[in-house]
Length: 260
Ligand SMILES: Nc1ncnc2c1ncn2[C@@H]1O[C@H](COP(=O)(O)OP(=O)(O)OP(=O)(O)O)[C@@H](O)[C@H]1O
Image (cartoon, rainbow, N blue to C red; front, side):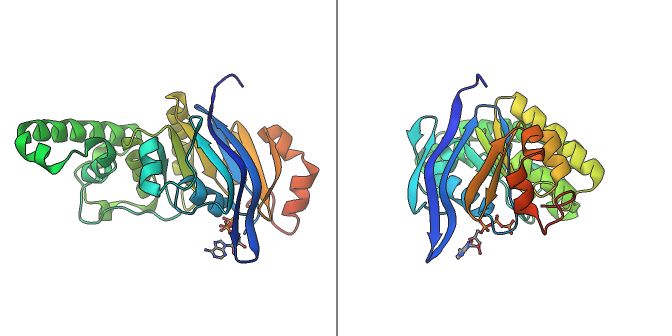
């Protein structure tokens, strides 16, 4: 791997009372890399994401982004650094069109002090028009170009997932955190999502995804990190993870073929 390190954690840990949800996690994500995070239920995947997104401070350890320490920053500051996330459940802004939903994801880049908005209202109007054009471009990119002016409530669940990705991309992230992006998608929607993720990575955006669908994880990612009881038990290529005895043992009792 020649790409430079974008995100790195050092001994990142999170306790909830006496429970060690994540212990001593060293994680690396390189620029433009697609990395999967898998593990049985309760392994610490969501807690890991919450720490990386600034939603939860680590109890111990450090998180570096582009070589600078960022643990302890609130989520809006983490987002401003270039980390965007989707959630397990779609969270569209109701009563708004798809274009407006994607524009809402640009607020980090559009935000200016109020006095500037008033004094430079012409500039603000131009910026808003440009934002709408870019939002529509992102909707085309995820295959929702035909629904730009539709109300979000008319979307299917799968289309809503794609809208979430477009909204994240609106913030021009360097790292995209996707929490179970394929959950609830049809086979075709899943394939479309994989294409979009690959093309996001080709633009230099790193993607870290939690996913229970093994077919998707094995086919899409370049590297997989496996957690069990809050600890990293494996870190390797899909081919390496597939034959790792420790990983197979962790999944014993689960249906390792179909779901994690
Ligand atoms: N806010 C919290 N308070 C107390 N315990 C928590 C909290 N959040 C998570 N946990 C516990 O931490 C452990 C790790 O949970 P986490 O949700 O990170 O696992 P996960 O791998 O994402 O699981 P799943 O695949 O089921 O979503 C679990 O034992 C969980 O019950």
